[in-house]
Structure formats: structure tokens, C-alpha cells
Image (tube, rainbow, N blue to C red; front, side):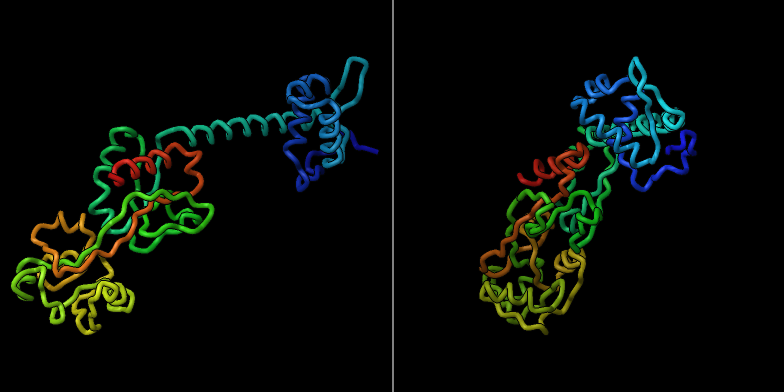
Length: 302
């Protein structure tokens, strides 16, 4: 037999189902199963089963049948204000989530490499400042790929297309990478930069490992490991070394064009790679992330 005045602490909270609790709440507030079913746009038998399931979960009787409909038991009366507060909290949570999805205010994190941060982002950030002044952009600069699935960033620009199915990617542009050197240094390698003798050149690289040398080998250029005289894992430091005349290195054509006295050396074809804007699937529901992503597409694709 039920204990009408059982304390709320006796309820089996571990098996609590909000769908059933909502059925109880609407039934209590409308006074009948039929009115509650209409309010929740479901059949009366379905609603009745949800209320009965809620009573079974809690181990109490919540309603008594009376001639004019339903009457709350003492346990139901005791429970009602708590469930009503939960309903209000759920409504507020939905409003907050909706605001987060539609507002262009708050923070959003963009992960990019040093080169992209220094030479590609200015028009993107300037445009967002005009169109979404309440948006705070945090630029996370790293030459390692951030893990969007772990939310290390909201959006990233990568030099490869992601393979994870839960990421959304858009190709921004293709880049051509050539060999460059400072004019004065190039002049020491031959009569003109196009015919530079790179067999006696010093090279500047991100490392002296096989990947870069293999890429150069595909161009017909065999570079010995000992020729890599300056190394740095920083893209910008490598670019500064090139400008300072320390040797020959690779740079995207767009970046080299903004760096003053650098000249292309050798008559080798370019190495190509693509830039991709990448975001988590929240891109589809968050106005903040969508605004940043769309701005990257608009201003870096050109």
C-alpha cells in the first residue's frame, strides 16, 4: 500500500524521467488527462501511461480520480512545486541555448598556424569587427593541428582536409610554394636567381628530416641533410632567416610577395597544398561559429 505522505527523499531519483515528470506537471496544472494530452499534442492513453510510469518510478500515487476529474494526492501536492521549478528551469535552459545559438556575442576560438595568423587574418578580423562587434575572437596560434573534437578550438584553418566524419570542412584556396632567398644571398649562387646553383646553397628549414628533402626531391632537387644550416619549428623565424640572407627556404608565394627583397631561386615547379576551414558540427547551430567560418571563406578564398 502507498504511503501518501512519504517524504520526497524516498523517491527513486536514479530512475527519474523528465518526459514522465512533464506529463505529471501538465496533468496537475490542467486537471485532467484529456486536457493535458491536448496541451502536449499526444493521445490520452499515451499521456496516461507516462503518468503511470512516473508513479511507478517514484513508488507513490500522485492522482486520485474524483467525479470532476483528477485530484492530487498529498504526495502529488508535495511533489508539484519541485517539478514546477524543474519545468521553469528547463524553459530557461532552452531560452539560454537558443540565445547562444542565435546571438553574435561572446567568444569563439580560431586555431591557425603562424603564417596564416600573420598573413591571412587581418581582413577576416577587420570584417568581423564591423559586422559582429560583440564577437570576441581568440586566435590560438600553433603549428600543430588542434583537436576540434575535444573543443581545443571552435574553428581551425588547416593545410590538409580532415577525415573525421563529424567535422565540417570547406576548401579556402590552393597555395603554391616556391624556393626563395634574399636578393643578396641569391646573387652569390649564380648570375641570376633563376639559374642559382643550389648544390652549394645553405638551406633553412623547419627540420632537416626526410619529409622536406623528399618533397624537394620530387622537384628534381636533391638536398643533403648537411645543407640545412638553420632550422626552426617557427614558420615566422624561418621567414625572418630568409629575409636576413641566411640561405634558401620554402614559402607560399602569397607570403613571399609581402616580404620585400625575397626572390624566387631556381626554375623549379611549385609544391602545392590547400587551405581548409574546419569546424565541428556545431557550425550548423551556432551563429557565432558560423559568422567566423563564413568570414574565413569570404576573405581567404579570394
